[in-house]
Every structure is written in C-alpha cells, then in structure tokens.
Image (cartoon, rainbow, N blue to C red; front, side, top):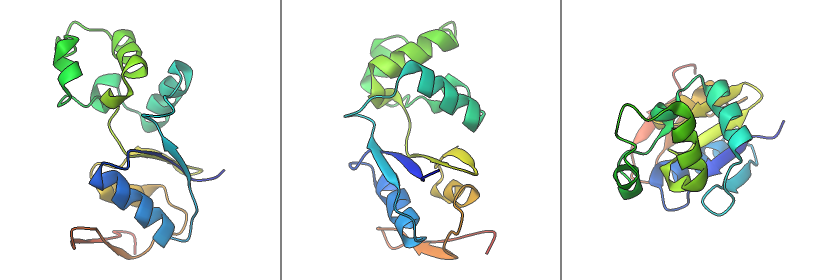
Amino acid sequence: MTTKIFHNPKCSTSRNALALIQASGETPEVVEYLKTPLSREYLVELLDKMQMSPRELMRSKEAVFTELGLDNPEVSDDQLIDAMVANPILINRPIVVTDKGAVLCRPLERIFEVLANPVDEFTKENGEVIINPNA
C-alpha cells in the first residue's frame, strides 16, 4: 500500500506531515480532501481504522459546526458523518494511512506510529524539532 495523506495545504500541521513523510523517503498519495471529498463509506472505514468516533474527528472550530448545531450532544454519529461528507472542512487533518494503520496526526508526532521508516527527528516549518520516540 502506498502511504496516503488527507491533506489541506493551508494547514501547517498538514504541510509538516507531508514534509515528514517525504523526509522519511516516501512519496505519498496526496488527497486534498477539500477538493476531492471522501465518500461516506470511506470515511466510516477511516474512523474504524483510527478507532475514533465521528465527534473526535470533527473540527469544532469551523463556523459550519455551530451553524449546523453539531455541538448538540444529541446529534448522532450518522448525522455527524453525513455533515463531514457534505462539509469536508469539518474533517480534522492531516490523516495519514499506511500498511501500519491510520492516524489523525494531531499532535504531529502521531505520524511516527504509522510510517515504515520514519526519520529520527524532524524540524517543523516553525523551527521546532520533534523527535521520533521509537528512534
């Protein structure tokens, strides 16, 4: 399987995740999920792989989150999934998928869990150095 990143180039964490993957010697499939939204079926599969609930994957800081009333705890998982499919901006990122699994890379260090040959350390675009805990 090719490494895949669900990416938003406007997001610094997403840009750092892509750069870290590349620094680890991989050429990932880059899916700009705002341009190419995920299907409902694939989103459900990703949630299962990440062992996350839809609410855990939501970007609650987006205006559409409150506009749609998604902050209401009565909103079901199915309704949250439908909202993310209809409004991909609600999906938190970056998500990285490899043979080793799938993770939401928040914090970025989570990426080390799924890369085959991750670098020992990586310097983020803001100059902060993160260390691979398995190095």
